[in-house]
Amino acid sequence: MKNVLKKTTAALLSFCLCLGAAVPALAAEQGTTAPADVAAPAAAAAEDLNGDGKVTAADVRETLLSSGGGDALAAAKKQLRALLGPAENAAASLSAAGVGLYDRVLTANGRGFTAAEFSYYYNSIFFSYYQQAYYYDYSYGEGYGKIMTGFDYTVSPEQQKTVDNEGNEITFAELFRLSAIAALEQYAYFCRLAEEAGLALDEEDDSYIAESLASAEDSAAQYGVTVDDFIAAQFGEGVNAFILTKVMRDQLLAQKYEDSLTDDAKKEVSDDEIESYYQEQKSSFDRISGRLFRLKVNDEADAETQQKAADGFIAAVKSGEDFAARAAELDPETFGEADSTKISGVAYDTFDQYISSDAAKWCFDETRKAGDIASFAAGQYIYVIYLDGPAGRDEARLPSVRHLLVTFEENYTPEDGATAPAESDYRSKDEAKALAERYLAEFNKGDKTEASFAALADEHSDDTASTTAGGGESEGGLYADIERGKFVQEFEDWAYDADRKEGDAGIIETQYGFHVMYFVGLADEPAWKTEIRDKLGEEKAEEKLNEMQGQFEGSAVFEEGALDAVCAFTLEVIAAAMTA
Image (cartoon, rainbow, N blue to C red):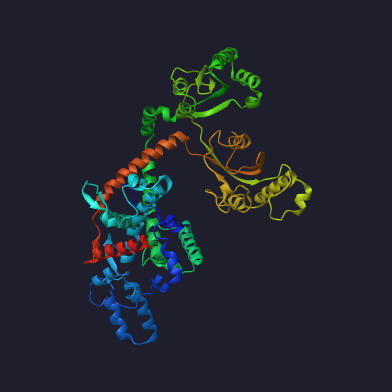
């Protein structure tokens, strides 16, 4: 079972191809969607007067008529808007059924959902199809979108056919309706289980929501519209900041439960299960280390000459040191450095893809031993491979570090340095070294924790790829699970030092500048073991999720007449957007 909608909101807010066209029109014609104050309904001003278990528009009207008084009147008016939405803007399909945008139209696993919320999920699923089909058409030519996805984004969903899970022919409009219901059921069920398990949103989740809404506010300001009007243009009439916040909170809470389920499943994977899987898939996890040299073959006539050179190379090599020396002698420009022939942790597929299948089979043959050497002709080269030992799994635990990079200019001139802005990273090597030492001293004067180093790196590091301040994927200068061969030698040597302890800090110099380093620690287990544990754990979690499906599937109960009305309304919104 797949999570129907996994964190779709942020992607949709970034830019909506299908509904974004409605935004410019809003700038010219304000007041076409629910007023902004609908976004934060006041505390209930009315009570359940007819005993049906919920506060309805009729209850609010009754309270409004009987209240008199300004404060009660204002609160009741706001609540009435929150329940129904302004009648002058409601779609005919909703009005005819007596359904308001903010009426509860369905209940699933004890959670109520409004017409606006259902519209959001329906629109989001429609958009995912629209965007994918649009992408293929835009990238590969007209018609590719329909070929690849089955969906024609230029035609109404009601006029296109597809099939459901049982192979029955249905329209795309019906598919979107079923998918929206399934999403609501799943989120409602997972949210309930999350709450029962004591899970709750944290500061990171709150920041995610705040950043998403801030992005919407920035985009709204660019178009000269309110944030609620902008959100409605993206997700359909009635979806405002309040509704969007509720949706995102539900999505994040449900995701927390699914993540906890997956984490628990990974912990349940036994060492025996991991070993059994490894034995079945050894070629996927075994690695080889050794040395590699190549000879360029210019043409067919040159092939025989170079093969003889490779044979002579092999005959002269008795050790790894011999290999490196011979390679440096034959091709000093490419292999002049002592470690330039070294290869480490290379997978079967790498040899198969970049050299040849014969080379891969030879390297990973179970009879291989330390000192084995052979050559392989592939394309324009003849490769000579020397093995340090047979293929096997790497039992090393990968290190994780944080760093703060201070760069410098190789061709620094005092004249340019004197005119550079104070905040510029244009600095000499001596200035960079002094600055790195200052940052290290600042760290050592504090509590010397990982958190304090991360904060220092986020504030000062020139490596923007590892800082949130620079828009990187990681934060605080973090590089987790460092694999050999992926970083410059000095960086790896510091991280892999056998005497390194958690909390160690220091400074190294590389071709990129001076790095203030912090050692986070070693992984709990070798990378190959974690990879198998994750795979088997995710499979176990998927099985549990599939078992759960029967517990929430079909749990949605709609108010009488609401489903058809809401779906018709949402299709009207989509049709308007497609012709905007």
